[in-house]
Amino acid sequence: MADFGANNLDAFWMPFTPNRRFKAHPRMLASAKDMHYRTPEGREILDATSGLWCVNAGHDQPRIREAIQKQAAEMDYAPCFNMGHPLAFAFASQLAQVTPEGLDRIFFTNSGSESVDTALKIALAYHRARGKGTKTRLIGRERGYHGVGFGGISVGGIPKNRMYFGSLLTGVDHLPHTHGVAGNLFSKGEPEHGAHLADELERIVALHDASNIAAVIVEPVAGSTGVLIPPKGYLQRLRAICDKHDILLIFDEVITGFGRLGTPFAADRFGVTPDLICMAKGLTNAAVPCGAVAASGKIYDAMMEGADAPIELFHGYTYSAHPLACAAGIATLETYKEDDLFARAAGMESYWQEAIHSLRDARHVIDIRNLGLIGGIELEARPGAPTARALEVFETAFDAGLLIRVTADIIALSPPLIIEKSHVDQVVETLRGVLARVD
Ligand SMILES: Cc1ncc(COP(=O)(O)O)c(C=O)c1O
Image (tube, rainbow, N blue to C red; front, side):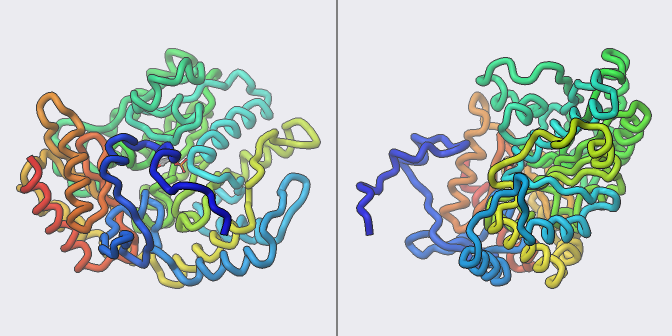
């Protein structure tokens, strides 16, 4: 084998990581199966975050592994510009069976960030194709995470993801986030209060006029900023206001898609159908990078009829519908269906809810929230050192054999949908012990 030189930690500039802290005390993962990772030393780590909210069916699912292996041996790559391969069409057709009714036109990307930028661009192009080219403003939300492309950080609402990167997209407004409303602490499922926050959209419309607004993008449940569950009625109201003003509603379902809430998509759970859905992560069980945007027939037809010819949408990626991603995606959809994993997640929800909320009296805990197989546990920040406590909780949990995710001072949990009650108990007991040990 070729000698590529020393294997040290210097060369890899790690994403969203305190590089110097990690490289002083590395944590490595070497293999994975079902609910567990294994470290190079052979220590078992219970995965309470599905990797990064993405391995929804659990690790190393045989159907998916075998499909990738078979496809790699058959055709490694094929372009999709002016060209096709059967798996791309098969994957799109099968995915369109899972997406909410009417959202059956699939554009493939490689990640959640690309799905977001794709959806925003489709929204702009759609209005233009209908002769409404002044509808260009994009509305995001505070505490929203929509990936790291310039579109995504512009509509996103995380200060640190925005503040270092210049002027971003122009013509963007933000709705207020839905968190911290009085009376919502320790809510189980959807909180009671806060639907009125959707009315802020009317304020933005009054300011700019609907003739200038293209789309609103929200995560149905905001994950990356610490599990913010929408108040009862909020998403319904947002939908109604968008309809009233001919504004497209985009759901970023990169984490809520594929059974996370016990239904195929959050749109199904909340009974609210957006015009575009962004997805990635669970789409291929994360075995091959892949994302997609599902668009309504209304949008697709308007583009086919009204946009420039012959290419209707000047957008796409070298790896859109990559053969390995399509093979992995088809096998992933089969796995969800044949193992009935969405229903399984729904069946586990109440046990998960009660278990997570049993940590209410654990040290440092100031709020707990949950929906589907998502849990958020908010800790009191250490005075003068926000995020430090949660980071230590993360590191201590890892040493104790549990993978969690922390964001600011919030623990975010999103286990694979194959989780058993015994695993749930282990998550809660490990966390209780870790919280008692970390100051
Ligand atoms: C809601 C949401 N949108 C977009 C993204 C970005 O996805 P990716 O990291 O695949 O670009 C994420 C990632 O966590 C996400 O949670």
